[in-house]
Every structure is written in C-alpha cells, then in structure tokens.
Image 1 (tube, rainbow, N blue to C red):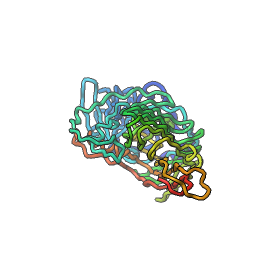
Image 2 (cartoon, rainbow, N blue to C red):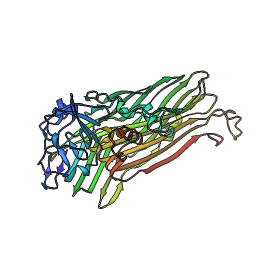
Image 3 (cartoon, rainbow, N blue to C red):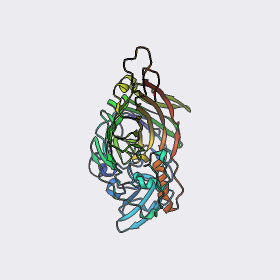
Image 4 (tube, helix red, strand yellow):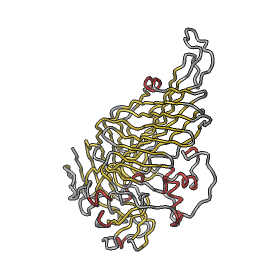
Length: 479
C-alpha cells in the first residue's frame, strides 16, 4: 500500500499517478519527469526542463553530463548555479553548459532535496523492493583506480598498493563514455581493475560477488545484506525549505555476511588492498509520482577487500552478523530515533573459517550499503537515506607451538578469529563516498567550479551499533 500527503493540498490518498511507465521507454532509459502545479512548491532557482527522457540524447557514464535536445522547453533558462530538474535521475546544480553538434551539454553537481523543494509532504508504506532497474556507470572516471591515485586517494582508502607516483593528466582528456543502457534486472555485472563483479538486489537482499586472479592470487567471494521479501516505509515533510520530519524503515532484514576463498601460488605471498569496488552500478526502484515529484529508491553498494597470505596458502574466511528484522530511523521535532540493532554470529563464522598456511592468513571486508528515497543518480541521489557499514575481519593463525593447556588434545594449534563492527548512518540529503567526491572534485577543476561537499542536507552521522570480537583457541592466545 502506498499513501502520500501534500502540505499544500492537505490530503491523504493514492500517489498522483504518472501516465508514463517508469520501467519502459524513455523513462526506463533516463527516468521520470517532474510535473509542475501538482501540489509541490519548488525553490525559486529550480528550472523544470520539459520533455523528460525524450529530451535526453545521452548521458555520460559518471552521470554528470547530460546532452539534451536544443528544443527542450526550459533549457534556455538554465545557467551555472541554477538547479536543473529534468527527470528523477537528471537533477542537479548546473556547473557548465555548452552547445555541441550532439546537442546541449549540461554538467551538474549534487543537490540536497531542500535545494529543490520549498514545500511538500510525502509518505509511503509497504513499498516492495522488487523489479529494480540496473543503472550502470561502467566507465565512470571516478571508478578508475589509476585516476583515484592521481586525485590523491591513498592506500588506506582502498586504492591499489603499492601507490606509485604518477603525473596528473588533463581533466579535459578524461575518458567519459556514454552510460550503458538502463535495464530491468536484479543482476548487474561490472569489472573494476582486475576484479569481476556481480551485484544483485533486492528480493533476497543486496550482495556483490567477486572474482580475481592476478600475480599468483586467486580469490572468489561474496558479501552483502541478507533480506527476506523486504519492504520500505518512508516519510518526509519540508516546509519553507526546512526539514520538519523524516523517517525510513526497512523491514525484512536478516544479517550482514562475507565469505572468501583465496589461494596463493608458491613463492607469491600477498598483503594488499583492493580498489573501492561496486561503485559503477546501482539499482533504482520507482516508488511513484507524489504531487508532481517522481521518487525513486536508489540502492548503492561499496566495498574493499584486504588480504594477507603466505605463499602456497589456502584460506577460507566467513563472517556473519545478525540484524533485527527492521533497520531504520525517524526524525521529528529536531530529535533522532534509531530503531536498529545487531549481534555477531560468532559460532557460524568461526566454524567456516580455516586455512592451510605456514603463516597468518586474514581477510578484512569493508562494506557499505545505502538506500535513498528521493531523486538523483547512483552515488549522487538525495533524499531520505539509510546507510549500513560493516567492517568484518576473519583470520587464521599459524601453528604457534606446543599447547600446554590442561586437557589439550593437539600439541599444535591453529587459532581462528572473527571481528565485527557495524555502523549506521541516516538523514535527509546526500552523502557521496569519499573516493568519488575526491575524484569528481579533481574533474571539476576543468570548469573552475568550487569543490562539491561530500555531504549536504541534515545528516545524523555514523553511529556504532556493534563492536564484537571472538576467537577459538584452547590456549587463549590468538593473532
């Protein structure tokens, strides 16, 4: 059941239906258009460019530059600093405009939802997370590991190691291919550096599978958020461009998991990080058009993997965290309320973690899944959001010698260890991954544009909801 209310209309009922199917034609390709005079007041510097997806000739894979038909009504009113609202994906503050043989190129940066809406009130209950649209950003320059290094992204942020000094190349020559077509699918395939990825969403949760084979290291793995027929409830009220109340709850959540199988060749020990992965695709679930505003649920994932293994080693690591059936928050009268919790499933994790090695083997996963109900594309989506971040560490120690503990059966012992930390972030606005923001700001230098802020709107900030460690060791000693 979907309900919505409008501050100006003062009613409750079904959302105003769009005449266009969001999962077909131009709307599938580029998103649904907003409608004026339907009960929502826009900010004075917002320009509604008409025609929706039919006015789009192409968009770059990074989602920043939209090439539009010169005949699109409202296009002449755009100028740097104003906000373009063409579709629920094509919305942002204008950075640059230029006319080319292909059409009018409009480059935009992220905006907060209160930069677009002056007055409006929206709510929906029981929105199913199904029939997603895969929005691929394959080829986006900010997902390129080399460009991440050039923009100053360091090893600790997940870049390839070792970091080698390189010469900055002109931002005007950055590869900016057109975005692949959006498709209806629960599966997204991508390749980042030497990693083959397969993302999925959303009926059974969100997850990313990885495959890697290079320099003697072979890895396969999977990590994500487990869910069972999930649904979402959200609410949002904006009055005078100020947030009055908001909330977002996901029902049907079960847990966070990560598992990895890795082998190394003889004489090929490994200790390194992956680049940030999973940022070149997202899933969009149309929610409906609410009094002129097309709203979409945007699901993004981001993760890195770090491994340490000796040569000729085999490592299997698993970590599981149990979640409550609901993840969520609400904001009202200036106060935040968190409705989430978690526990480490240490028994399952330890029993599935093992290694054959003459040294310490470990894997660390940093995984973030974000759900935003609002508008905007992929990492630049703005609205009511909920982010869950997990750091999962699983390790197997080498044989450490004779076990002198009373009753010990095996004089030689391997130790298994699992650590889990979980954080929750929520709010209204946008929050761009640090790596993406750094590389995008590197790109924006070409337009003499001021740097974009990583966050906009009213973020609560990260709250730790779990910090737990467990190990299996007869002697009590663990790596």
